[in-house]
Each structure stands twice: as structure tokens, then as C-alpha cells.
Length: 184
Image 1 (spheres, rainbow, N blue to C red):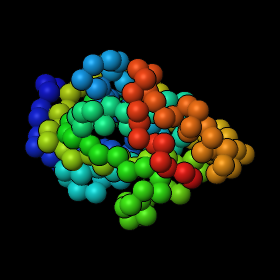
Image 2 (cartoon, one colour):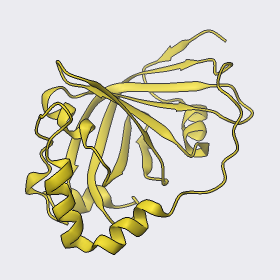
Image 3 (cartoon, helix red, strand yellow):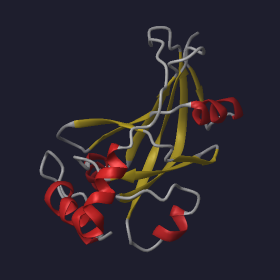
């Protein structure tokens, strides 16, 4: 199967996304490191064929938020680890809303209410590309890890805020992430 390109997500691609347990984000500023992050926990919504939203929970880094302050380009990728060999990428520009910022409540509607939620990302798609997944191995999904939710619940809102201050206010390249004003 050769790569195919589309202006927006097709119905079968939206169904494919709904079947996946993991997706990957790819972002970069104008200089510095390129970031690729795995995401899970059923945190993604396809709002329309050209608009995707997902909830970002607290993690050890905050690269995507830092990159988007300098460069709004973003790529999301899914790949099938089951029967259908397919890789799907959506390219576009994205924006970020930090926890507690104006618009948070409206954007959070329909997303899971997870402890440690720190940002909501919105991607406006301008290109979708499919390619074969012939080299992607077969893997079986077992279950979501409870570790991150347990960690955030044990920290509590004040502990999560302290963690954001310590670990999430700058990228690994020392660039601001915009999270400093957000408080859980």
C-alpha cells in the first residue's frame, strides 16, 4: 500500500483512531530538540474531520507545550499493532490551553476528568497521510497503567502544582512551557 494523502480525516480513519490505545505526538521549536511522545489513557477526541483535541496529564516533561509557544506545527501518529497494517498521521497547527485558563472548562467537556490534567491541545488538521504498517509488530493490548493517576491522586492538587513548578515550567532546552500560571 502506497502512501495516500487527504485534506482531512476520512470516516474509516476516524474509526481507526477510535480503535487505538496509543497515539504519538511530534513537535519541534525552530531550534533545539525534536520531541516524540506516546499518549494513552483514552484522552483524545476527534471533534470533526479537521479538528482533534486531547488532554495532557502531568508527565516528566512538557516539551509539546514549549514547542507550540514558538512553532504551532504538530503531528499526531497512530499505528495498528493488531490485524490491519496501517500508519496514520495528521499534520497541522495546534494550540494549548493550560489548566484553569480561560476556555478550559468548555474544552474539557467530553474529555476524561483525570487527576493531574495540565493542558488541552487542539489540532487543526491541514493534511492526513496513510502509509503501510507492514513493519509494525503485532502486539496485544492488556490494560491501561494506573500508575500516573495513582501518583497524581497521592500528590493532591498542591503536590501536582509543586511538581509543575519543579519539572514542567521549562523544556529540556530551557524554553518556557507556559504552565507557570496554571494551578490545579
